[in-house]
Image (cartoon, rainbow over all chains, first blue to last red):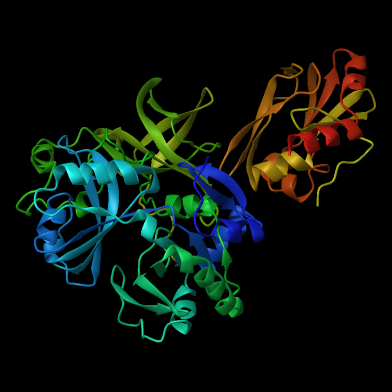
Length: 360
Length: 128
């Protein structure tokens, strides 16, 4: 039996088409994936991301403890700042990718993928030395309000000015009278907020945002649009583009790895890999021939398999078939060409600059 | 809303078929395009190639999913609809206007064995 978020009844009432996602009963789309995608690119869309997990470290030493588990550096952050980071194992490969929030040196809040929440918590508990993590996943619902018009809608519902809450910054305060963590983050490539609130307040918050956003035609969007939006940005999806077989350096996420930090799990492997050079890289490519690349399709050269597609779609905003995949480093430079095996047909593709989507 | 013309024949694979002279025109049903969502790519066989009843003759893809197209009858591909490969979204606009291929059937009576409209609609209702 799939788990339900506190917004399940709202999704059904609003015509969401429900599917099982990582053990959760979630809306894949409402009025149409392309409409929902466009809504987020040009207006404002609401996503239920309550299935995401939350893990907290509190008390003296919380920052040091959490910082030793992730690749990015919370010590270099200000209070009220969040970072995207890898949670790695000793092999230097991904346990998960996370967003870590620094409330204070004694309060770190980490948002993790739904499918990995239990695994991540067990991993953190096993590896935490002094400050033990607390799994807060059942204490939070989360609504992502995304799009160029998201700021105005959320601000209208917030007595506090949100002007100072820049990208990857957060604050706490009421939104429509509901106490929230108000985070200027997202997974769409658009401006917006992710709002964490108590599960029993989520439905009231959801409807309040839809109501307040009527002038902007705010409406819900499903997991399908979430995936096409993130793919156009080449944002990694755990289980597709990153996993426990790949390091952040191979995934092109060197920017979230702070090798000048005193220590973190997986660091020695990454130091060695950086010195030796990565054997393969995650690249973004566009199709030169017809066809849409899809996860697990082989990437070939001269008939030999040299890599694999990890994500692919026909991008609704870019109107092109694009993919993400691992290729040998020699084939990773912009302009490199290879083939994608689309149902037995070798379709030519070329490595391009990412994100695929650039704001007009 | 859902729409299943009574003058068409259907398959349990959610294709429709109708006669055009001695040939059979094939497309996907309202249900198929609705389940797929926005169609963004259609791959059709070459004119003159052979298709086999219940076997895949092509592919239809939405932003999210890849789905195979199954032939209602065995025969030779007489025509393909290039307008649909150029404008895949036309399948969503009107799945009955956006035909995919025309088959010259090997056995004329195969067409008669396809599902009639009430039987197909009943099978959709049963799957709900």
